[in-house]
Image 1 (cartoon, rainbow, N blue to C red):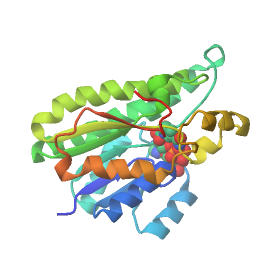
Image 2 (image 1 turned 45 degrees about the horizontal axis):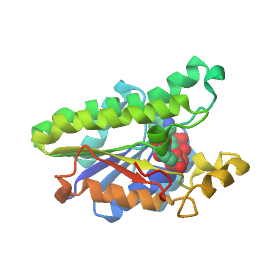
Image 3 (image 1 turned 180 degrees about the horizontal axis):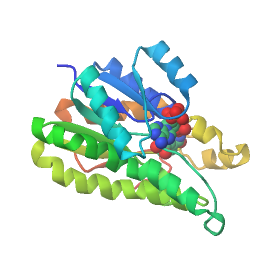
Length: 240
Ligand code: NDP
């Protein structure tokens, strides 16, 4: 049986690596994105993975798109909540809009996606949910009160949902990447990045594939005893 997996923000960066790894592991994958049509079309062409454009911050769009994916590929049994944004500013300069955008895309999205699939998962007695947190949700980060709060929220979300899903064979786990070589990190000024790399014991940025590997592990049928856990993948930068 080939289970259906949806990866949010699945056409670029870490999400693209997750989509590709899940396909290689035999899953039917749907990759979501929101704005970058060119990247999504190129990704679909290169990988053969179908792409679905919707805003994970909007519950109605999530419900509608997940119903469409189920119609196209089959019932959705795996959800990887990976989509995320940053809108950095120190607290005394942060606008309400920066706070709201980051909370909506990084945390409310997890509610929207999970709310859209949870009833089906409960009925079928199977589900795998992986939420992508961040080292900055574990340790906090200067200039990222909004992002750190949203990512920290993912831990509580994951653990509470894991308790609710356990009896129905629905596992819910989070992965906390450290600094991974994607466009999000390339946007960090070079001087700042050099200081960050100096603090990573492994001595380099992580690769998107190194996160994808953990997702494939957590969504497997025989990973049913792993739930409510937080897996840090950060080159030893923060041992939590
Ligand atoms: P990228 O910026 O490279 O990619 C982000 C993806 O999310 C894109 O596919 C983008 O779509 C999608 N996206 C953004 N907003 C929405 C939205 N409202 N609805 C649907 N999709 C959306 O990010 P990364 O690959 O670097 O990060 C992936 C995840 O990992 C994020 O949650 C991030 O916070 C987390 N993370 C990343 C780290 C890193 O070092 N890179 C470290 C720790 C955590 P589109 O292509 O259309 O713009």
